[in-house]
Image (cartoon, rainbow, N blue to C red; front, top):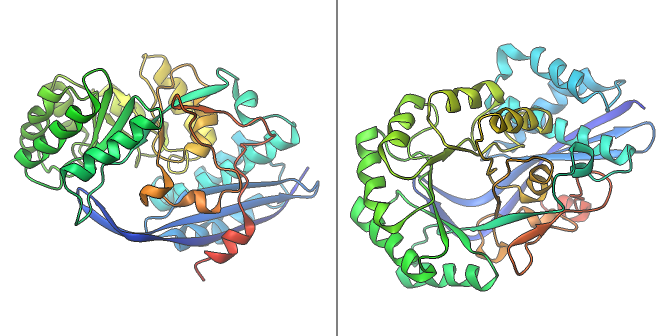
Length: 369
């Protein structure tokens, strides 16, 4: 089996109204889509959220990675990962270029599992047939007060979730504590509340002041209290509050995740397979974490992460966004998107490959030319 073509292109999915988290407002979601095709007729697909850089990711795939891959056996995922990474290490250790590698590696594993006529989670280990999810939301909108926030969380409970996540950090510490208190009151004491600050606080003093204000409301974790590069500062926060720090959605490669664990910066790791280097690298991160009993709760991309969580022993939750909440829009181009059942569990796909076929008509509609 040989790779004959690698194609990559950006798409742009508009949101109905602007949505904000602590330090950014979004009006659309862009993704880079990558296809790997072979002489045996197998086709694999991978993708990554672009954060307004999807076109650059796609350009990197076609200009820098495709020449390395054409003529190679797509099943040689370990060797090809190192050729892509080591061959471009001067410009591609993290960030945009690592996202480009991620899209290719995901597509290679899709081909590999299809060629084996096996669902990806079975090929990778087959730990579970279904995985738990949490409902992610609590974003800011101009007309969204406490009552609307409560209504959103009640909807998630009605869908069957007993774990929910909300954004914090855009308002003052006192105002945010009121928002968190409202959500805790709405969901009750027996359910699990997660918080996400998106790296907004600039010092351990500021982060600790805010995080300690949330302690009476029993959060399970606080995600990215400070920017991920400030590892020592994050470790101070993790040590200074009575609930754990979670992080990793913007982090790349196993080496960076090892540093997060070794410094005590995070108690829960959140590798994103579309960011950290693809499935090849994601598995190394998860398996290293398992040696230290560190749970994995990956960021976004539930269509992919469900199968990956179903292949490891230390998976915690998959993050899920309801499309009608108009925050994440990628399901608009997925032919058969995964959804939680009425118990919050996501049943893993049983088709060969990673099980995330894309709707090519929808891709053409949203192509960002």
